Image: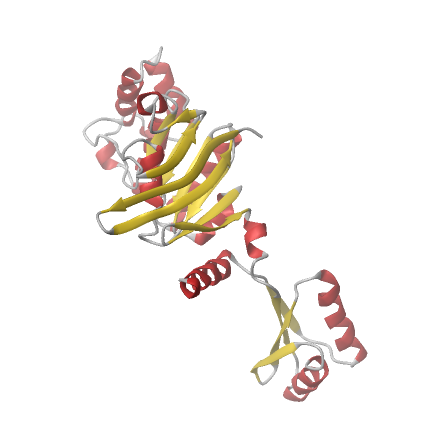
Length: 310
């Protein structure tokens, strides 16, 4: 795959506050890339550097083959940015907002472009309503639609679902997935781990100005070993017998009188072995459930490790 963003050794400080301390990552063309981190981790600073809003103190950033520091004007022709707050004009209709940006970007047929984007983002019914009457989710969709005018090679979305209700957030996730399916590279920052898990082809975790891990969601989850399987039995006696049987080989915790949890390595063979041992011991659970590592678990482990190393 073709690399569209290559960042090496990126640093940025504000007086004595070191925000970025040597950030490295790359993004392949057509993927959804999520930069994950808590508030103050440096996510917005990274986006602002890549979109030419601020200059880095050190390191290099190449976007679509162009050096951000050396050719900021040229970079702006290849990218689009949607910030944390929708940059729409409330006094204009949705159609007028789109036509205005089309004119500014010298698009050949602004009216046709507006109509196409209104349809693509399910805003046709509200095309001629003033944006001040829009819900937060509708404003966000319009904002992203405006960002796509001119067919940018990559679109930067800085915490696009902040402040949205669950339904609007889900709509936004679908919008982002549609963008990627259409071939647009998406650079997404978020503090919502579930959002990164649902959307991203690749995730980088930014903590205290450094990338502490990167990879797919599945690869990152492997950083947290094991999974937990809970068994519920009919009686307290059966639960106690199951604990005595399984504790010979596994770490077992009693949750309540009839439920216990077993820590495993997460492999299919070991999970199957658990059921075999219970069957051979004439112990049949009435219920069972498995909890595998989540990005929350990964994030807490990475943050904790980074603090210990510091």
